[in-house]
Image 1 (cartoon, rainbow, N blue to C red):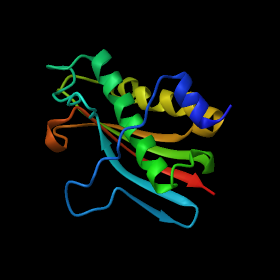
Image 2: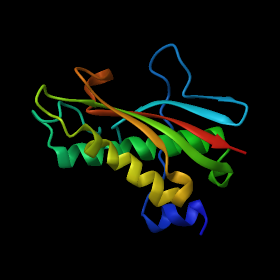
Image 3: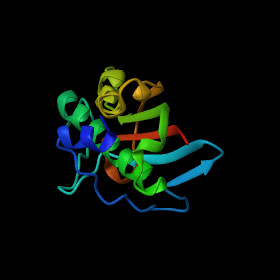
Image 4: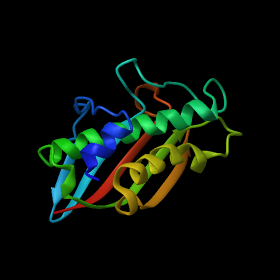
Amino acid sequence: MTVAARLAELGIALPEPAKAVANYVPYVQTGNLLHISGQLSNDASGGLKGTVGADVSQEDAVKGARMCGVNLLAQISAALDGDLERVVRVVKLGGFVQAAGDFEAIPAVINGCSDLMVEVFGDKGRHARSAVGVYKLPLGFAVEVDAIVEVR
């Protein structure tokens, strides 16, 4: 099954890739590695903002991490001129959760993005990962994830 067919089966339409909000670019390719800048838990409805474990539930945060994954896919697609079949492997995800001091389920939140990569790319979506709780994220969003992807 093609990546486009998997996305359709999952009911995912890729959004317009987010533009940079500071002095950086959304992605950089060096050799066969594509580095995607951090994507926030943002969507057309305004996304998910707040602190997980305080005013954001773990369940909603998992959905926010999935939003990050959809935004990563949009950036990957833009970098590859729409051809997601060029993805050889999702190499690594770096996940960040704006977390309350006593919230420890950071890896479970980032699974929202990790699971999406496997749903979309199959075994090529299995990756190494970091999952980190932080005090604040840009613009008050609850989750941010960046990626390194091998491409051909």
